[in-house]
Length: 286
Image 1 (cartoon, rainbow, N blue to C red):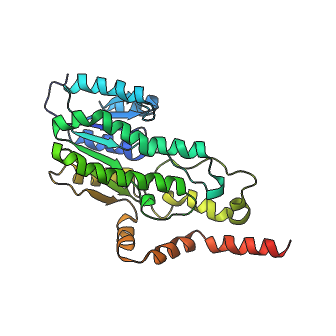
Image 2: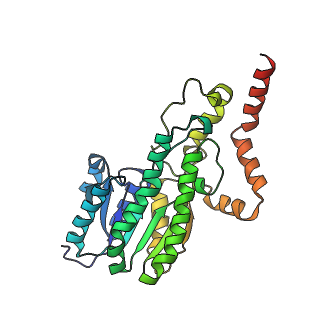
Image 3: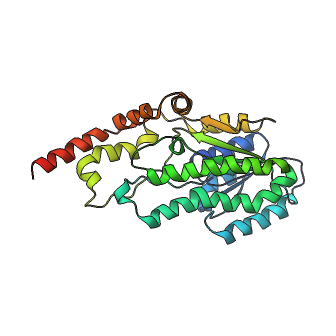
């Protein structure tokens, strides 16, 4: 059991990107960090900093429950912060979606969060802690060619908003981060089918979507982590935090401008009309 009074934060998806930077940031601030990921070997640099690392698969109930037993033993049954950060991309257009892949995305982005919250809520109640769920602009905006990912994040946002009301009587706060562009090495690397009509008529559009988060000056994960820590560690935290490149711009756009204008932005950015033109031209030349 811990022999000090430091607060404890558990972070999923801590092997890279936001999760890794957040682990470092919180550790630097004197918080006892439990960094979790499927691949422990990718967290060796965190271990060298004195951060405890744990193997965790959020899609596996046994893995989550075994981790909970370890945390109870370590902390005496308390947890101050639960950062549900593990995520899985999915950038496929509508006719190329594989249901098994879609299900796998929801297993990580939605059901994985539900598992963690259900199992660790008793510890959070003991500490009057906070749950921080990593959402995305994709859950707010109709970004083309990623309907599965978008809908998984939209589901997460609504889940977070609802459980905030349910857990408030027990002293647990729930925060959703609407994350914009943040530099990472996580992207959709799987190829579209050879017969994909979207590759046939809109390859440039598909490639643009897949590179979207890493283009246009994405925020460095360390900068994101510092800003998020500043807000989460306050006594009173906003229930929704917009952070990352373009996050605040799209807060304004999605809040105050009509949906038709938002649609126009993405139709233009991803050259959806070019797909329409290419398809029409192909039909005429048959």
